[in-house]
Amino acid sequence: MKLISLVIIVILTSNIFAQNKGVVYNQAIHFQLEHENDTIDFIVADTILNKKKPVFLFCQGSLPIPLFIRINKDFVFMFGGGISNFDKATIREHYHLVVISMPKTPFYSEINHLTQSLCYIPDTTKKEDFRIDYLQADFLDNYVKRANIVLDFLENQEWVDDSKLIVAGHSQGAIIATALAYKNKKITHLGVFAYNPNGRIDQMIREERKNAEKGLQTWEQANGNIDYWINFWKNANNPIILKEQLQLIAWKSFSKPTIHEFTSIDIPIYLSYGTEDITSDLCDLIPLKFIEKGKNNLTLKREIGLGHNFFEIGENGIPNHKKEHWTEVMNGFIKWTIK
Image 1: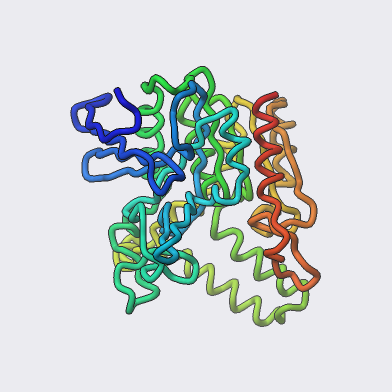
Image 2: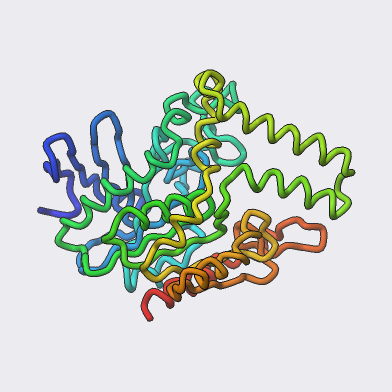
């Protein structure tokens, strides 16, 4: 099979089809899988596949952000689920770096169809309205299913060394990566970044308490805000309201604690988080769970003074976007996988 050409092949079962759409924007190779009623776009962050290497699948965080964004007529930006922050050359020395598109989200978009957070919106007059089919597809089991379809496809490619399989994820992607490693026994190494073992809703309540402790709000304000989040969670668990407010689907799915799955995984695990990241406060307790189980497969790396996206945090609590450390954080993980 020619690698850099448009090819349609049948893989695994008769209802899965793949297209190698070739090099896009001189930055990555675009593949597209059709499975049942889903189209799964993913990229290999390289322009040629002439060397057999293991796969490194990076699971991106939340929000419907396209993999490629046209900034202007002369420049198309490869967001790639956040891999734009990585030292891709170093990763490519050892692995095929793979990122899967968000469900029901265009692979590519013009900048005018994105919010300030780069989220895709079909109607530019409605800045807060995501696609309905995206909201319906935005749940953990769907991400795991889509990732396993991609991994099954890659395993059968002649340029893939299947003796090793790296999966890592950031934030929501850390939960997806954990669920993948728990279920897919072909994965050999797991990396989680900015992970919350208690799930999404937990963070919101802890943040209200912490803001009161820091004096950023009164305890009376915190009391009302905590009650708001408790009521929010009641709505997310109400089947009738869930059908009406589709954005609650992801909240319910990604608020389930995953510490049992995480501590049940037996392959080597690398856990990295910023000490200024409230999302990951509870990661300090995770080593205790491994000790209780008599397990020693966890490597923990606290990133001192860094926040959720590994920017340095100033005294005002605001990330300094001129001082980012994703490159060092990810290269540390890559070095660990090679050891």
